[in-house]
Structures are given as structure tokens and as C-alpha cells.
Length: 337
Image (cartoon, rainbow, N blue to C red; front, side, top):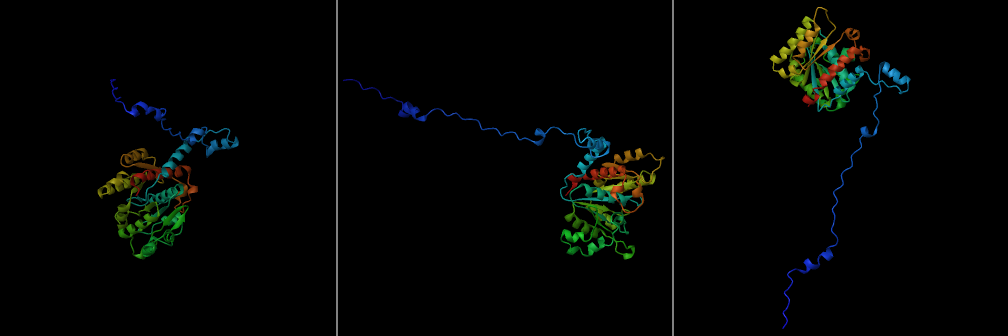
């Protein structure tokens, strides 16, 4: 009898399944995202248009065919403006101070406020915290009728921006809050009052500049420093003016404000100057102690002591206040809140 063949150990699928699977599938890699075309990739390089001087005249006369570009001074000004416009998270409070009066402290506070308000898009206010009938409003608006004392009397009812604006006057884009103008009123501006006003202003303004008044030991100064994010110390390039600025820094360090002293900006107001004084040595001395030093040159418009019109400042004076504004704004990212 014939022998039966051994069973094939392979399965049906192993023998015939390939006929059903079809051709092998090829997997393509995922497509890569196309690069994004930026403006700089598609536009020809352009020389920036000059905005002043002979360069602008030449540009305009030739219809732009000849463009020498901005000069060094204009580029430097543009760089200062970029620093002034630094982002500010929250609010920043600047105290402008000096151990003694007569060195241009109120002028510096006013011009700093004007500079920051003019070149930024947020809200700025300058507050006169002088307990002895300060002159800040006289220098800026000539309207000191409504004062910080009025705001204090009505503080509980101030709940909106419109409410706050009833107690301020306007110099350009800068809001101004005047001090009490009657020395015989008998109501000194105390620490707790300053702190309440400053806290209120911080809810509605991004930048609060305080003209802190003469001296360092009055009650309002304690509140000013307790709330300050940075300080500007005003002096002069003279023996007594530089000495006052130095003593102000010493006082700050000795009274628990060493960080503010190290991070301060010193302004040397050059209304009073003498060839016998080595101004360079004074600048070097303060440059080793603080974050920055600015020299504000003598300016006939500021020297009158009258109302300040920024358009009448000499170019060098305007640049000095741009430098001051830039130095103040450099601290916004570090200390703003």
C-alpha cells in the first residue's frame, strides 16, 4: 500500500497570505514647516531718514536720493529714548532728594517728570511732598489751588481715575499734584499721609516722581523712602553742592537705605560753577558710589525760576534730562512692581 505524505508544517497564511497583503507600503517622512518670511528678509536694506540738521536738509532737498543717515548725536538720542521706553511692570516710585535746598532739586524733579511723561505711553505724576509750601506746581502749571491736602481730605471717596484727576493739574502729558501752599495751616505732611497718597497714586499711575522737600528728617521723608523704588540725589559741582550730595548718600546708608544709595543717580546742577573746582574729580567720586551721574548744564530758561517750557531748553539741557530719564528707566525691570 502506498505511503501517505507527511503533513506540511507551514500554515496556509505562511504559504498564501502574501498574495492578500498587497505591495509593501512606503512611509514618507513628515513634511518640515516652511520657514517664515520676516520683513527683514524681503525688504532691501534702508538707511534711516535723518530727522534734524544738515543731514535732513540734504535728504529733503534731493527728495531722498541722497541720504547721509542720522548723525552720531541723533543715534545717541534714539538710544536714550529706547531706554526711556523700557517696559515697566507695575508702578515705579522715584524720590528726588537733597540734604539741603538751593541746588535745583525741584527743577530736576519737574524736568524728570516732563521727560518721562513726554516720551512714554503710560501715566506719570509728580508729587510735591514738601511740607513747607513747595514750588513744584508753580514751575510746572502755575495752578496750585488744589493740593495734596484736598486729596487727603477726600481720599476715601477717590475710587476712579476721573476722581484722581480732579486733584491734579496738567503740564503737557505730566500730571502734577501740588503741596499745601499755606505755611500757616499748621498741618504738616506726615509719613502716614504720604504713604496713603503714594499707594493711591500707584494704583492709577505707572511712574510716581516725588519732590521730597528740603531736608531728610521730616516725617514725609520717612514715608517717601519707605515707598521709593529708586532715588535721584541732587547736588552741584561746587564744594558745598557736592558735599550736600555726598552727605545725602551717607545719610541714606546710615539709616537703612544702603541699597537705594548704591543704586542712586546723582544729578549735578551746574547753575553754580567755578573754574577753581575740578568737576571731573567730583564726577569720578560719585561714579564710584552710585549707578550713574548726570551733569545738567546752566540753562537761562531754568535759571529764571519761572514756569518751565521744555521747548525753550537748550539742546544740551534737554539731552541731559534724556540721560537722566534713561538712567531712571534702566531700573524699571529690576525694581518695578
